[in-house]
Amino acid sequence: MLRKLKTIFLLPLSAMLLFSACSSNNGTAKITGKETDASSKDDKNKATETIEHKSEHSARVSIAGTDFVVNGRTLWINGVNTPWQKWNDFTGNMDEEFWDNEFARLAGDNINCTRIWLNCNGEDIIRLDNEGNITGINEKHWDNLDRLFKLDEKHKIYVMPTFLSFDHFKEPKSSAGKWQALISDKAKADKYAEKYVKEFCTRYADEEYIFAIDIMNEPDWVYENEECGRIGWEKLSYFFGKCAAVIHENSDILVTVGIGIIKYNSDEYEGNKVSDEYLRKLTDDSKAYLDFYSTHYYNWQKPWFGFPWDKSPYEFGLKDKKPCIIGETHNDDGAEINMTLADKYKSVYENGWNGIMVWMQFTDSDYVWYRYDLTRLAANAMAELIPEKIHPYD
Image (cartoon, rainbow, N blue to C red; front, side):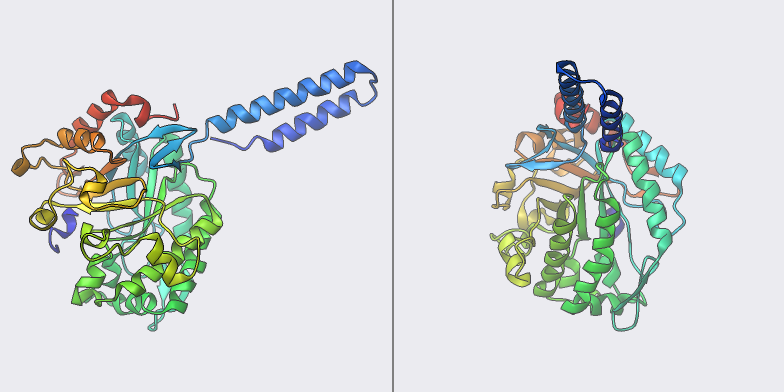
């Protein structure tokens, strides 16, 4: 991400229909004969048609084969990262007007999904003791998310909330050791999944514009960097598997992990640390799996792993049969490969990826997202190319 450039609707109709049916039955209870039967059947048929019509317009994203689908129609993620406004925005100080305006801007430029960090680092949301035990959750966090998820529905923008980042584990942040202790202990990892992840699912399982949950941003650095604890993959991946299982148990929201480098997402390199087989082996839970892969790519990776723009997910190293997106990447033009950002979007689509989400860190100096001019051009070009896949729910 640019920040670490080194540092590296629907209202439920069941109650209304039930009331309607009861009223109809009560109103005709004294009428006898075929007329009553016909009227009752007509009412039931109309009710069924209404329910089916509403279900056809659900915005919930699911998976069919290697595609994202909405009501049976293919969805292509024409996406961005708008990760934070000020850093840790959802601790009780959410700027609702800001996010309302930004969702409106994205919708106006045919961007259909954005990745937002719900918790950037520290303990402002999930409070820990010195041993990494959860002592409480900031209730104002939930109030902020209630409002955030009303805005995404208002503007028909999918959100991919990211729960944690390597930043939580990075010293000299005072709480880094606490997070390192949490993720290194299975019992404490289980508590996180039960106390935070399950609560999130309980509250927001019916929010149809939550595209997917990203359990953690770039755990690669927690594994590789001394300042983040150099925690082994068996502990990190147990944590991912446990969280994924809890999400699958308590909702139908899709699940992923934002892997920073393809080498940890592919058996061609260090091994796929988030494969179904690995997560299930560590957790002994059949629900411990990711629904799709969300690999990150930046140009510094090219000398070791190539670049994905002219390759299919399979050719880039993602061998499992899952939907695959580039979940974070530059939103400027890569002169070194002679491709504009619009070229990259188009090439990614033509090579079989299921979407792209460029990084757009907010810059306070001029109060704009970094190079949004290029993002706008690329996203609108894709909306012209495949409008039915950018807005399948319309």
